[in-house]
Image 1: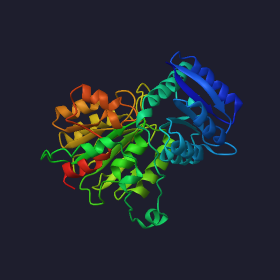
Image 2: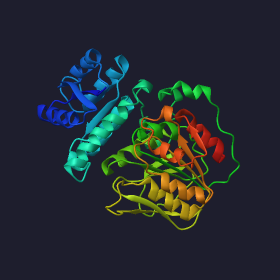
Image 3: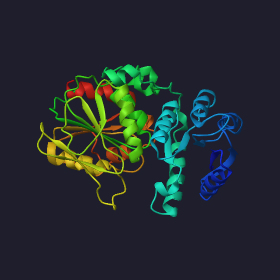
Image 4: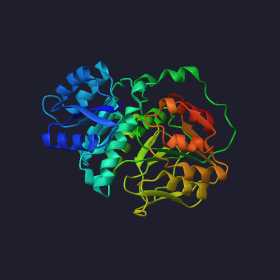
Length: 369
C-alpha cells in the first residue's frame, strides 16, 4: 500500500511541485494539500495521512504551531521545509522541538547536485520517516532560560521533556567496561537534533572528557543548533572552529559544509576544520571525523552512532574498533531512521545497541563522570 502524504504550503506552485515529485514514486501518493497550518491540523484529523510535508511561514497558522497541534490531536510524522537562513534555522529547530521528525531546505538546488538527486532525496526522506509512525509521541517544547545563555549557568532539561518510548523502562544501563577514555564522539543524521538534546542534557558540567558532535546539517543551521544546545546543557557546546583546543566538559559541533579532523596528541589535540573533497557525500562526514579520531586517540574513544539515514559512520567506527575503541549504536525501536546505527550493528562493530533515553546516563556511567 502506498504511503499517503498531505502537502502543506501557502504557495500553490510549491504544493504542486512537491506533489508531482512525490507522485512519481509508486510507493507514495499525495492524498490532499493544505494552504495554511489550520487547514493542515484539520486535514490531519480527517484525511489521516501517513506523512505530512510542512512549510514554516504560512498565514492563519504557522508551521510550528501546526506541528504542535497535530502532535497533540493526531500524531503524524512531519517533514519540514525551511529556508537556509539563520532565522530559518531557528524556526526549523523550534519545529523539531515541537515534534517534527526531519527537515529539508525549501530550495531543492541547495540539497542536491542535480534535479534527479533532489527528487530521490525528497522521496527517500518521506518514506524513511513514514516507517516511524508507531513511535511518535508529542514532545513539550524545550526552552532556554535567558540567564543560562548570558550568565554561563546551565539548566538541565527534565527527562520528561524529551519523550521516551516505553522500552527505556524495560532495560538497565550496560555494565561499565573499565576502559580508560580521552574522547567522546557522536555521529548522527535524520532525527539527530532531538536525539542529541536527549543525550547531551544528561551529561554533567564536570564531564571529564572533550566531546565531538557530527550532525548532518547545513552550515547556517549548525551555528544556531550549537547555541541552542549550549543553552540547554550543563556542558558547554559550541560550533567547532579551526584551531579549537579540545577541553573536558566541552562539546564541539562540526560546522555544516565542512569536515572536522584532529591534529596533535591526546590531551593537547586541536581541531582542524576543512572544506574537504567535493566527492564526499556528507559535509560534515562521520566517517572522516571518526577515522581522524582513530589516528589521534587510538582506542581511547567512546563513539556513539545515533539515528540517521545511510551508513555514514560505519567505516570510521570500524577503524576506531580496530584500535580498541568502544562503539555504541542507538537501537532500532527508538530511532527516527534506523540506518546509520543499523549499519554499525550489522557489521558487528557495536558492542551495545541502546535505547535513546538510556544513552546519556550510560555514557556518564561508562566514562567515569
